[in-house]
Length: 133
Image 1 (cartoon, rainbow, N blue to C red):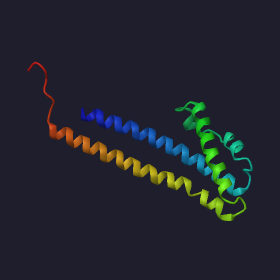
Image 2: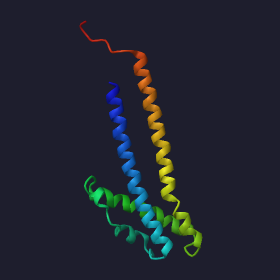
Image 3: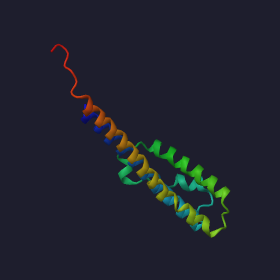
Image 4: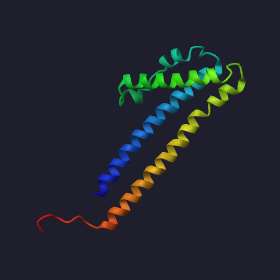
């Protein structure tokens, strides 16, 4: 039973890591486009983001386009809130990817703490009784 717990945690960690990796790569690309001034229409730029080859093997392109649209909406909102002419806007947007990785580490740590606690509870409970013996 413990192996099943850790298998589920490993699968969840892989999915979480992949999601954050895609989000960080997309946010880096969009932040560079906004900082360089080339991204006048952020939504159009997000639609042109090249899907990495490693991602195309694992994820449906429709899902990637939905993620692209979500990031484009977020960056469009940030572009409206922050002045587009300010030099610090691009550098501020550059902090999105490191912030994503910080959130990734916190969530992964919480997942491991929860799994460790469940593992400890399973060990404390002892082996399950076999019916009929």
